Image 1 (tube, chains in turn green, cyan):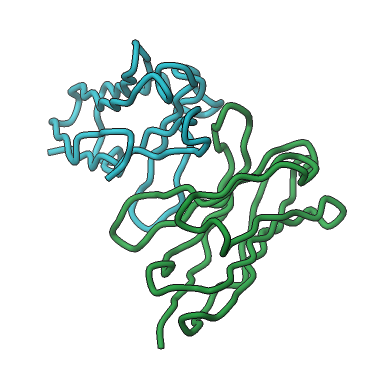
Image 2 (image 1 turned 135 degrees about the vertical axis):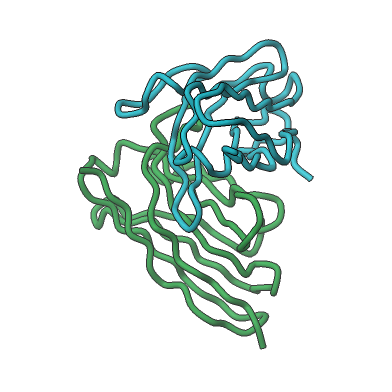
Length: 118
Length: 110
């Protein structure tokens, strides 16, 4: 069974950094594009970033461009989100998701919570 | 405010049918596939519909999707109390070069 498990969330001060990880199992990780999506509690889902199969092509939402970087290690079956210059508005639950093609995310992790506060 | 417009809420009685609309433009829905997600309270989203109208294995045929022009629609028949959730449409925007989520629709089964 395909599974994604996020880790790395926590409390960080504004301006700080955090790296989220997403461990994949039960499917051929290197064959699939991957996404990060976030959700402020009580609000809607917002796409954050996407990466292609070998990591050579990435896209980031304007709200995080220049601050967040998506990457992957296919040898470790792991997706990452490096978050720098964090702002209070980045506080959210962050989900990783497997893309089955044409932007359809068919496997999701349980989410990891990032809180940016002084 | 999202580029994709969904009604904030819809409601219907158990056993009835409901539709949720998702309105966009030629740069997104008009030229790209739409997928739909269900998010039950406190859980991760779940893929219901992909490529406008296809259902992943395990999704009952009570759920259906369609697309016409710059709009897409999710249909749910035979409503159950367990269908109470938030529903989101998603697509790619060719001009913005980003994945976009609709604002979400809260379904209440009265």
